[in-house]
Length: 132
Length: 132
DNA sequence: TCAAATATGTTATATTATAACAAACGTTAT
DNA sequence: ATAACGTTTGTTATAATATAACATATTTGA
Image (cartoon, rainbow over all chains, first blue to last red; front, side, top):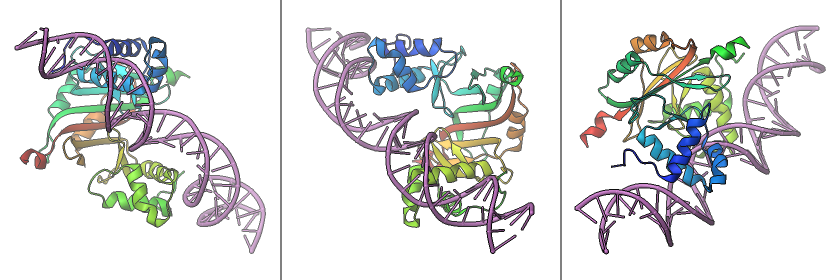
């Protein structure tokens, strides 16, 4: 089992930059940003990303191939994720809505498949962008 | 505006192969399968895929970078998609559940963003795989 | 302390997707 | 019919995303 708490050097570096970012970051943009810290290869980034996802510290936004920090306290392991994505400015917001989460976690497919996990991505134009 | 009905040659070829497939197809696997029909370059596949998605004939499974035919009659333009994905055999099923669709289409983010579209992916182990 | 597990560094390569441009095709209005 | 327009095609090149494989180092725990 993975250590619950301690992050390795590279994991911490990658997590830091994702947490500081205003929006989702792509793997190679992370790479370019940490080259001064001695990380040189994509592999090092992807490995850290994988572990951080496994720990629930970050999430992958599948429609963008990009990564955001987890802002929801109950994401120890991320089985139930929902995001709000602006199609204009690319802003991503994690949605934590207990009702939504319960509704979807309790959803059962007619064909009898029991779900372990879901990911939901909403798209629209955010308030800021509507004003422009 | 796009023609609503008629598919171009390449679009039809790509749609055919996706509709015949048992599971989601990746762009390059489509390419390899249609080379005998004279399609030679990725670009030709991706262009057809884009148009087909725009028409609601196919959907992209974001977590797999793969494409499936639309099985839901009301997907003229796909603003509300949900899928059930087996993590073992990779099978993908489009979920058409009016309640779910209404619930999510009516969902409003606290932060005031109005959604135009959503995509939901459920993950689990399908019945077939559970037996093994 | 030594074995196992985890993390790192590194090179190479696979996979997924788009840019850019020229030519052909199909509408539709005249 | 034919000119004008938008769409589709063909093509070459390249960008962007992600993993394989292997050698070494570090951490952890019995």
